[in-house]
Structures are given as C-alpha cells and as structure tokens.
Length: 508
Image (cartoon, rainbow, N blue to C red; front, side, top):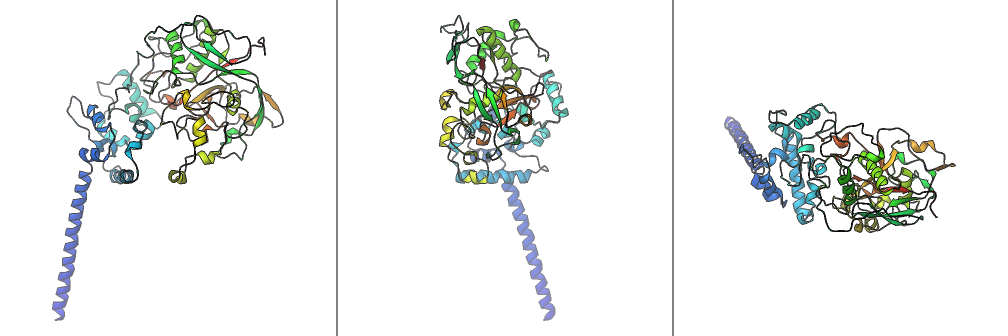
C-alpha cells in the first residue's frame, strides 16, 4: 500500500508539472499572438485615432516608394527586438490605455504632438539605423553626405528625425531644401510709403518703411531707475538673475510688438541674395547692406506670416535688419539692451511679472500640477506661453498690453538682446551704486535672449528670467557647409523686437 501511495503521489506530481508546462506553453503562445496582433498596422490604427496618421503614412516614402516595401508602425515607433522592445511596448501600451480611459482625443493638439520635441519620445534612433545601415549610398546628395558625416562625428545628441521628421508621415509643408520661393509675395495695390515718419518730439509714433506698405507702432518709454534682477526669495528664480542692482536707463522707443513677418519680409525682399554663399566674415558698410540667403524649409512652420512674429532668423540676421531699418528710415534702430528689455517688461513693477501673481501658482511643472491645474486666468490674458499658446506663435490681439503699452514682452517668442551673455555679470555691480545704461561684456560667444516663448513654463516668462543663444545646437541639422549665418535650423521660438534711440535735439 505504501509503494502504491508513493507511485500515486509521483503520478499526481508529474501530472501537475505536465499541466503547468502545457499551461506555460499555452500562455506563452497566447502572449506571443497578443504581442504580434497588437503590433499590426490595423491594430495601431484602430487604437491611435490621429486624424492624419493613416493617410499621411500612406503618402510617405515609408509606404509609397519605388521598392514597394512597407515600413510598418512598430518598425518606427518601437525599438528593435533586443533593444528594449518589450519594455517600450509596455510603456506605450500603458499610456495608450490611460489616454483611452481618461482623455478625449478631440482635445489633443495633434500638430504640437508632431513636433520634434514630442516625436523623439516615440520614434527610436535604433529603429532607423536597423533599416538604414548604409548612411552614404551612391544616390545621396553632397549636402546629404555632409549632413550624415556631421551626424557621425558630432558630439551633439542627434537623432535621425532631427532632419527626417516627416519621412514616416508625409507633410506637404515640411521641406528640407532651399526655399527659393520664400518671400516672393504678390504685389498688391495698397499704398506705398515714400518717406519714413518724421519725429519731432518724444511720443508714440507709427513708423513707415519707405518703398513698402508696411508700418509698425513705436512706444515712447520714459527712462528711469529700477531694480534689475530677481531677489533670492523670488520663487523659481535662477542664479544668473542676481544679485539685484539699481540700473538707470535713458528714454527710448520700443516697438509695441515683435518684428512681424510682414516687416521682416520687407527687409528680405530688399536685401536678400539668391546666389550668394554663406560666409562668416560679412561686414558690409551701411550703404551696401547684404541680407539673408534663402532659408531651408519653411521658417514660419506653416503657422502663417502677416502680423505673427518673425522667427528662426539668427542674431546676426536680426542685427542686420536693424542696420537696414536705420538706413531706410534715417533713425537709430537697434536691438534692446538687456537692461532696456527688463525695464520695459516690468513697466514699473518690482514683482516677478508685470501683473499680479506668484510663479509657483502659475507653473504647470510637477506631479501635483498634472492632477490639479493652476489658476491661470490672469497670466493667460497677458502672456502667450505653454499653457495657452497651442504650441505655436500668436498674433498681437491675443494678449493685453502692459502699463507702458507694450505687448508680448514675456512669452510668444523669446527676444534677442544686444548684449553678450555672462551668467555672472550682475556680480560686478554694487547694490548701493546706480549703473547708468548697463551693458554686458564687450566680447563673448552667445547673446542674451529674454522673455521666454510659447513653449515656456510660467517660470521662464518672469521679468528677470535670462537665457542665451545656443548657436551650435540651433544649427545642428543645417546641411550647408559652412552653416548659415542667417537662419537657425533647430529653434522656432526665438524672434526679436527693435528699439529706437532718442535724438538729443528732440523736443521733450
């Protein structure tokens, strides 16, 4: 009896093991089938309800090509097997389920999600390189050879989609090539100004650009002494904003809004050169100003031109625009100094913003803010930033003016200043002294930019917030050698506005 009992126990144990093995095989088989099924194009399209996804994919070279080879969804949007494939699939699957249960796809800003900074989270470099192993095929252009060589040798974190963002989903407005038709606006029968505006006293005026129908408003900003920088107890401040010191600025005029595409295209049409090559040693006399070469792609990003702020031009281009504007109007136009910019932005206020509010209350950063949205009614009325811009620049009608009558100093586009950037420049000044018309260092590599942009959190649109140009990073995907001195290829949130110096002979 004991022997039979032992044999019976072994049979039961072996049976259970066999059942377990079969169950594991079945589970693995079902899991593999589930993984394969949820990786098909049909399943992806059924879950991802992007209004453009399927149509733009089928128009792209990943589907519509001479070889007849189809690049499927998971081949771009998941890393290859052996490179974190299942982990990425689980992560994206969880996000998809969460979105289906708790979000409304009608509220998504699909255009914004197609931008590089968002696309890099679900398009994988390893996936691109698995298919495109030869980066120097015989069919590649000279510019392509240069660009791929730069990709291989650069220490910057470059991805394939930095240049080829719209290869997988076709966008007719996204062209990575010289835009030779840029700025060719049909002539209209509108009035053309013969002369600039004559100014005899220090008050607001509307400037007219001779030979064009373009005009813009200039606001008289009376000079005064103010506290520049942010105190140590200002929420979300950065170290380069202090210590606070007293600065005195002279009277000046400042453009009511940023330089618009309408204004910049007047300069482009008057000075651009179609055939001239890029060079770093251009330093023309005022009576022979040479302007930009044609840009690559569409600098306005398809957002529209007109009254919207001009973007993607370099600091050099903005400075040259000011020289040209001075030439055609007979006035002294230039970029604002950093002190003038902050003084104009504050408009008499010493708080973080030129309106009421605490940066911590307006900021959207942090887990808590993902659940409970901040009350942004006040800041939304004055600033175009991350929370209300819909991921693009806006026109001047979107926001209210500050106490000086100036719009969009914080937000919309970050703005070039005349000064070179130095993170320690404020430490040169004493709190007891009054620094008259302070300027940055005499030499440097990068220039100050101020104001934050449509991409910025509330933290970065404070009056004292500082930033600077990043020339190398902003030219990573420019395929030209040498790279353009006129257009940035990798930043879309920077523009500029002009100031005009006051002639001492003017009636006050």
